[in-house]
Image 1: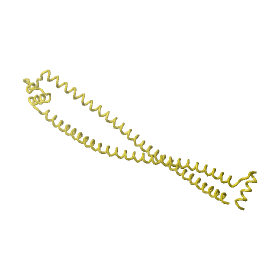
Image 2 (image 1 turned 180 degrees about the vertical axis):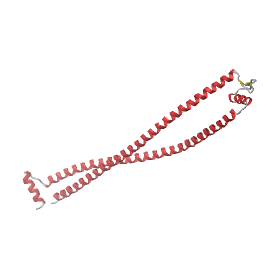
Image 3 (image 1 turned 45 degrees about the horizontal axis):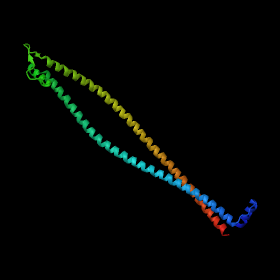
Image 4 (image 1 turned 30 degrees about the horizontal axis):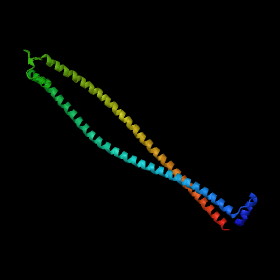
Length: 230
């Protein structure tokens, strides 16, 4: 059975006369429609590809930024660790020296103890005198200064304890925030991975659709050429 016979059979069933020009026109219209769909699919695939490339570039930039932040943090933390080590060493030295000084002060005889008090408070040497029993006699201003310093020392000690509590809470806050940040990074990575997979799927669908329409176009073109050249 030839193509002409097929066309005649279609004509009889449809009740219309189809000339070669009509058939070519219909084929061209069908091809135009298919090319329109192909153009849309191509445009969509280009958009999806652009989105995927932009996402990959943004991810690369974020990774580079994160690397820079980590490097800056490591450098800053190294400096802080060094300073903290020096602070702890200073504290240890002060505590050790103070313990030795306390033992020494407790063993001082009355005159030297008086001079020690004058040195600490900044009062003039000879301000403290001794009574016949070798007990220290302090002028009222010196006594007031000693009491004031004791009050301040007590307040400082309590302040240090309170500040230690604040530091503990701040450390806990930083730990909790670090946990949240770490989880945010996991969520972000998962989101990026999901978006990439979605984009890859869309690109695959676009490629499949373009291939389908391309094959259809080839077939239609072949039929059109055959009809126009019986």
